[in-house]
Each structure stands twice: as structure tokens, then as C-alpha cells.
Image (cartoon, rainbow, N blue to C red; front, side, top):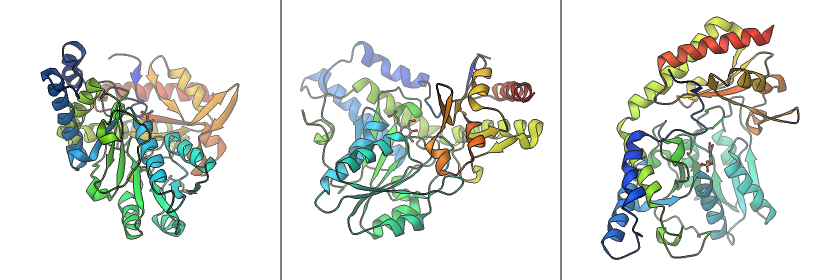
Length: 380
Ligand SMILES: Cc1ncc(COP(=O)(O)O)c(C=O)c1O
């Protein structure tokens, strides 16, 4: 068993060996520009189109509805700013939630400086948006609803299908940031009823530096960058062929192994929680609502123990993340935990543990023992 044991798969995932193998030729010999008309260009264009189909199959859309970007942050920027600009004469109101990733909230903040009005919907104690609140927030000048599919910190899955129906009824464009859910949940754009959906390569065993945006046919959207016209002008710039090939393969593998991966991630997460609860009892406070949660995610607080102290105490053996930031001795609670109304002590004690598709039973049993020992020691 290799140490430290990595249990921070919501932060990023390693590149899947099958994905790395697929990318290899593009590191060495296949260097053509997809826009070139001779053979090495055309074959790289074919590779990009193959990847587009692989991504589209995973989320059940047409290949032409997939646009490659550099990351989820870029996809979110293109979606939000692109839709805002397209509709600026119709209205300047955007609805989002108070538990979004900064790759959404910071874009909204920027737009609010330029005159857009943003409604941040509240959430319940588990971080769930109420679709009725979405409906009540809609105004004549609402041009976009953007609500994440699943939360990166606590794993909460939002009622995207219900919100999609409301958006459709009111003819408002609906975007979801699915950076955390693609590969972990059944992400089907038809079933979800979304117009735009963000994908992050490095959360599903592709490399960092590649993302995609699903833009449903008929959705009017302005480009943010100007250049050579690649990606139908919406994301100009010579294609990152090697990473596009990687994300395509990662999506193919994610679709092929979906059920097995989901079962494995959930098995590890549940075994871990059972082990912790059976030995630490009610010193364990679970923030995640496991009935409605990403299968791999556990947001948990150990009573009276600072998350930073715990995470650094175990860091030689286990890698996990905390629900708060610590700067010069001051602990700032994450906006997500704040929006969930978690009390300061619990929030400051919150760690996020996220399992991966290759996490083993042996690793989990080791982690249970290490965490229980650490909590007992730090409680003295
Ligand atoms: C929900 C969500 N959206 C967006 C992002 C941003 O992803 P990236 O940094 O790859 O652009 C993340 C990364 O953690 C995320 O979890």
C-alpha cells in the first residue's frame, strides 16, 4: 500500500493509464495542426472529432454540442458571460445559488460590477436549493439560471431536473456546473433539462488543462475570445489536441466503467464512515446528506478538533482537505458551510474526504485506524 493515501479526488484525479496511453502518440509524432489540409493535420482533426463524440456519448448529446475549453472555470465563464452578453438588451438578471464554486460566483461578481443584478438563492442545512425559490426569483429581466449539479465540498446533488423544467417553462437559459458530477453520477443533458453544462477533465481521470462546455442546439451565445474561428468561433485558438484526446478517452472509460466505479467509490465512502462512527460514535458529525450526495464524498466534522490540526497531523499518511481556510492563525469558514448555516465550531472542524474509483478496502481500513487514532490523541 502506497502512502500517503490520497482521499481528495474532488480536488483532482490522477490520469488514468488508458488515457495516458491514448495521449502518447500526440506527445511524440502526431503534431499536426487540425486546421491544416494535409494528412497530419487532417488526422489530428479526426482525433479531435472522435473525442467530441466520446464526450457527447457520456452526457447524451450530439457531438456538435460539445465545445472544448481549457478547464471548468473557462467553461463557466463562457457560459455565464456569453449568455449575459447575448441577452444584455433583454435583461440583466441572473439567478444562482449561494453554494457555487468561485468559478461561478466570481464571474457573477464581475458581472454585477458591470450592471447585472445577481440573485444568490439560499440553501437548506444540507446545501440544497429549493426549486420553489428559483421560481419565485424569476423576473421579467432574468436571462440566465446557473445552479451547480453537485457540490464540491459536501457532495449535495441539486434538483436540476425540477429547476430545468421551471427554466424551460419561463423560457430562461439554464446552465449547470457539472464539474464534480460527470463520471460520478448519471449526467444526461436530456434528463436534466439543461441548455449548457460544464465538464472538467481532471475530475474524471483526464489531465488538467482541459474542459468542455455542452451548448444545446439553438442556444444563442456570444464568444468571449476572438481569433481563428476554432470551435465554431466560440473558443478560437489552435486545439489542444493531446488533452482533447485525453478527455475523450477518459469519457469513454467513464461511460464503460460507470456502474462499477460508482459502486466502488460509494463502497469506500460508506465503509469509511461506518468505521469512523463505530469507533468514535457521536464525536462524528456528518454534514453531507448521504441520501442525496455524490457517491464518493464525505463532509464530516470531528467534535472539538480543528480540521487543519487533524489534516496536518495525518498528512504523512492520508491526504484530505478542510472546509475552512487558515491564514495567519485565523480560520475562515467556507461560504458553502456558511450558507448551510453550520455553526462555527462544526465548520472549523469539517474535513472533506473524497474517494476515487481505485480506492481499496485495505486503504480505507488503514485510514479508519489512522483517523480514529488521530482524533483520540487530539481529543486528549
Ligand atoms: C464545482 C466546480 N466547478 C468548477 C471548478 C473549477 O475547476 P477548474 O479549476 O478545473 O477550472 C471546480 C474545481 O474544484 C469545481 O469543483
